[in-house]
Image (cartoon, rainbow, N blue to C red):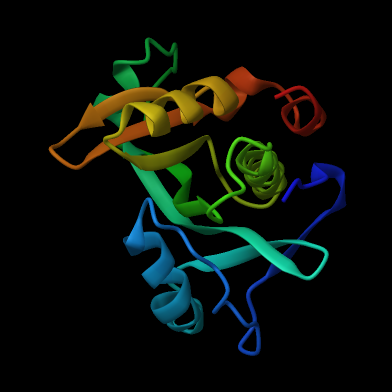
Length: 180
């Protein structure tokens, strides 16, 4: 199935959203999260999940939460910040997945554009300097975030690579949505 990325519809997950058709064989954790945990996490105000449809087909999702980045991690980025705080506010891209059979059609890139647009809206309401993701330690996943989001690696462990993008380095909301 070929997706027209211009027809994608983004909406917040609701209690009556049917997510049973979503399959992500690359990561059963992501599939299980959407099917079993996303609505609970949203009710508990831990994260908010957004679903992406093309027509009636559920083609992807992402979950957002608040996060932070330590000042030590930011120092590795060579940022010139006068009197830096101990921690910087960040929007955490907690989960993101595209449905099986639909990868490499631009859906993930469109989801990232949506995340950046939301981050820029947040900066007008609360402090939000970075977008952060704890990416699975998989070369394809790392390349995706580097190439389509401008994320850089700051720390890693055996399972994940913490990556961030500085919203001040992207520009304004208009550029982040249209040019990325």
